Image (cartoon, rainbow, N blue to C red; front, top):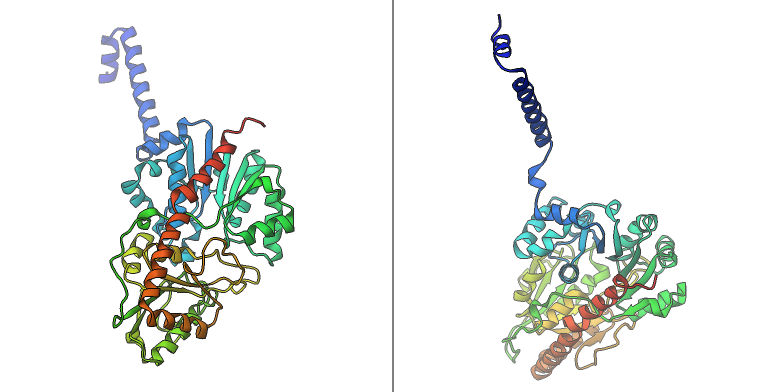
Amino acid sequence: MSIKKNISQALPSGLIKILKSIYYFRYTFNKFLSKINFNKLTPRYFYNKEIKKFDLIIYDSIFPNPISGFRFAEFNSLLATFDKVKIIVNPIDYQSLNQKADDHKNDLNLLKKTNPKSYTKTFVGSVKDIKNTKLFYCVFLNNIYESLPQLEKNKIGFVFTLYPGGGFDTKDEVALKKLEQVLSSKYFKGVIVTQQFTHDFITESFGCPENKILNIFGCIVPQNSINITRTRRFQNGMKVQVCFCAAKYTEIGADKGYDIFIETAKILISKGYNIHFNIIGGYGSKVISIDGLEKFFTFYGYKKYEDLQAIFLDQDIIVSPNRPFVLNVGSFDGFPLGAVVEAVLNGAVPIVTDELKQNTVFSSDEIMIVKPNAEETAEKIEKLIAAPELLNSISKKAQKKFREIYSESYQLDKRIDYIKKYVYDTSS
């Protein structure tokens, strides 16, 4: 007789039923536990599951990459402002910064350490995850167009910022059809524009109602340099430091005017000036030949936004000779570039182009505007070298004005109030 049978005969039948129930419960429970990934049971997991309907969902393709300083600043502020908010990130645009998609994990880990509240509200996903929210928000035409089918499927109202770039092209038929579909959607609530050119384009070309447009000149920037103290003051006999800072999207950076910058540098070097040129972005000595002149140049490569301050504090002048309609037939940059803003906040004098007449706030003693022409740019620099007091005066006045225009109270508060208006709108 088997041991199992002996035990069965010795135990009361009622106890055997209890033991079988316990065994079955343990087996079932252990099987249940084996299917659970306990690594996912984090505050982020419960935050996402507990909220049945969000006040705001944000979508992006690069957050929290610190190179995109304006998005980093804006989205962190929105995540801090609203209680029921999350951002869905599909990091497909890392390649545009010459980074791998896997680098997104590193940026998330850094966010976890530096801003745990934002990290709790940040989720990797796709547009298919856009649901159960009062309002949706994103920046750039490509992102809102990609999200549009899901927004209309789930009947979600949306607001977006139409920055230059990001698929916005005033001459490209595909881009124009995208913009038309977005602006004509019944779920379109409002659009934030940052340039008068953009405002005029969408009102004149698409009849976008004025009451659906918030026009704020400029962009949001991290505030780490907003009140920085500059100790450098240019004087006769000092080596003048001139910089260029932009992402590289074309072979020689013609859209950002890198070719003009190098030609300007060669003109000034040939005249024997005590000068040095500093280049930040995806450029090197082989993009445009500087053979024999290498000692006059420093190439920094791409830098995180927070690393720019240390460089810009030692710059006397930043040159930004960018051209519209070069990258694509209808594409253009914002005025001025974000890198220019950061440089000026740190005291550099801006020499920039403005072919689309987008400047509506800066005077001639705060910013120097030139044509996309090396000779004219070189003349402006020579004028500043010859008159250190003029250079220092423009530096001080520009820094003061840029602090006003790019402060959180000027840039961010208006955006947040605008988005709140639609989140808490009870009229519909």
